[in-house]
Image 1 (cartoon, rainbow, N blue to C red):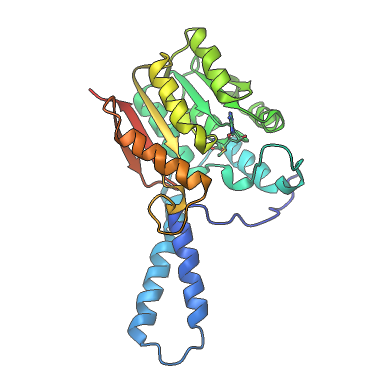
Image 2: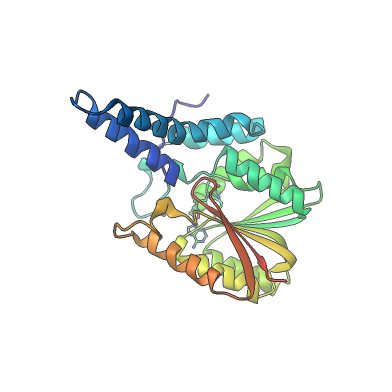
Length: 273
Ligand SMILES: C[S@@+](CC[C@H](N)C(=O)[O-])C[C@H]1O[C@@H](n2cnc3c(N)ncnc32)[C@H](O)[C@@H]1O
């Protein structure tokens, strides 16, 4: 039996941060005299729009499988703060979750992908979601730096029939990519969701070392990075890395791309025709 969540997840998407900011404004205006009714009404409407979006998307999206729900519950219940402070930093908010998982599953099914690569496994939510859409002989290879979290993911995969389609490569992803390329492996769909500073290198390797099959699709997560690429506040290291990555992709004539404002941003990239 899982323990209850140790902490409510903090907002990690642009819309989640907007909703949080609007709640703070409303709290700040509580009891303040002289605020025109029209302003309070606009604020109420803005809070409903921003705060209601994610729950609404959850409600109207195909439900997740029992195996995915159990994996997400296990991830929420785990005490990530108790990890060795010298180990790779991990937190429950890294899990992509129901709506993004369903979007990835849909992309695997719609493209007819048979071989999928994931860079950044964590507890395995997106890997298992994509594996559920693969044919019985399909294969998903997931790269993960942290052995402990990879073993946690493998325990969850063992509870699902789709889990048998997943193999995990533990180690720095660039090393795993080099080994996969040397073995002549190719992938129809790749989900990039690891260290943000590594994104540009991963996409270059996929395009240049033969890992992306002809007609293949690259999906890259967190490409809105909580709005840091366009906000005027000084961005953090991840915000800078994503801003540079987005600019690099936008200037690369080899590819065409679109940033879908799903959760914290999902960029779809393929070779230009
Ligand atoms: C955002 S999480 C992945 C979330 C997962 N895709 C999901 O949807 O639940 C990022 C993961 O990338 C891993 N990672 C970070 N740097 C890495 C590297 N250089 N090579 C491989 N994995 C790395 C982290 O350990 C972490 O588990």
